[in-house]
Length: 324
Ligand code: AHR
Image (cartoon, rainbow, N blue to C red; front, side, top):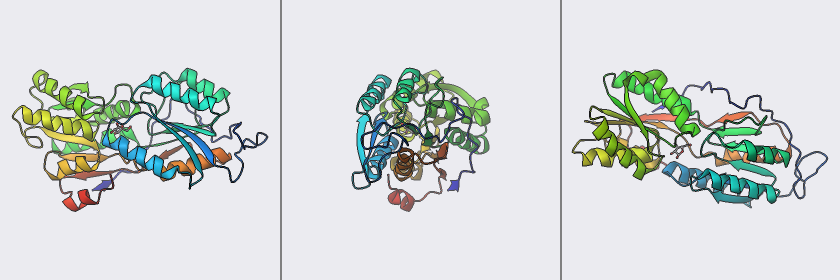
């Protein structure tokens, strides 16, 4: 198990974010200072992008466990079922409800200009969670918390370049146009791009990952290694590889990202060869950021959640102790 070096994150498309105080017009807030009144619950509209993976489920549980009434929050949680139009609708509903803070995890990077401008015009601060946006709106959010996806892809690529330099790689990508897909592809290809023979999306789900790998094994029969952008698609890949009469982890090696319990179990079982962690349990950090943003306090432009990586020396005890 190793820990990532301190990541040098790429600059955001929307650069120059200020930890600025946004003018809040929330009930109970002080409009002259733009801060929520002390003692009031902080109302937070959270648009989760879906429930597509074990990672997402763990992230949702962490958010809900941290933004509770007992901890001073009034959480309005909406699951967008991986549809951008659902997220945009939820964001507009949060504006109509005049929440103190809007938090959301954008399913893809583009297409947010209009609604981000509407949120800004309403004076509601945005905390971006997990994924990133590519927008022309100036200072579109106050702060962002999530993982360094590019470093995750690079860490996976470095393992491949070192341990399987002759492998022919099929890249099983997440939702096309999402920050997680774009940056993991970038990081991996910077290091091991010369080994990639083909790529396709499995939309971060187990079922679509299986379908994509079934097709890939026909189109790219030379494949000896699959780099999957998440564990769920990798678990689908195991099924497809076995159905093709091959042994996952041996005939076709699998390098994955996430490190959910099922993914680490596949590693211990010898079906995955390497797993780069993407830690979904950052609800406590998110809650602290939201409180500070609502109070008009300074917050960092970005908070990078720490990741580790796991190889086949990982033990069953580690899997059993995994919280998600
Ligand atoms: O944005 C994080 C990614 O989204 C996780 O790696 C994946 O499992 C999830 O769907």
